[in-house]
Length: 153
Image (cartoon, rainbow, N blue to C red; front, top):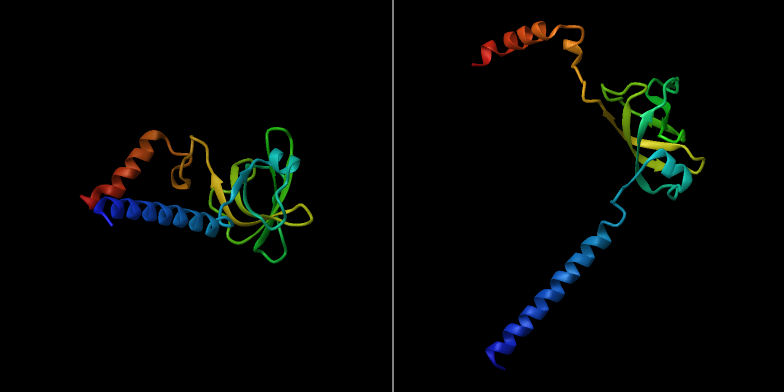
C-alpha cells in the first residue's frame, strides 16, 4: 500500500474517532444540561417532573414563608406576565435573597407543580451596596475603604 493511501486511511479513521468521541460526550451529558425557564414559560409549557431546569424571575413580595423546621422556605417566583410558580428550598439562603429581588433557582418541578430548588442564586441590581456601607455617604465609605487598605501596602 502506498504512503498516500495510508495517510488517507489514517485521516478517515481520525475523523471517525473524533465524531465518535463527540457523540459519546453528548450522549453522556444529555441529562446534565439544565434548561432556563421564565415563570410564564414554565406555566405555559412545564418541563417533565424530575427534569433538571433553572427557573428565573422575581421573588413575589409577601410570599416568603419559613417552615417550622427552620431550614425550609417557600416562596413564589413571578414573571412579567403575572405568572406565579411556587418554589420550595431547603438550605441556607444567599445573603442577597430578599422579597422583590431577582432569583435563579436550580432544581426540578414535582408532580404537584411546585418547583423544588436544590440551589438558589440571588441577583442584585446595579445599585448594590454592601451591608457595611449602607447609610454612609460616599465620603465616609471612601474613608472606611482607605482605613482597611492602610496595612496592605
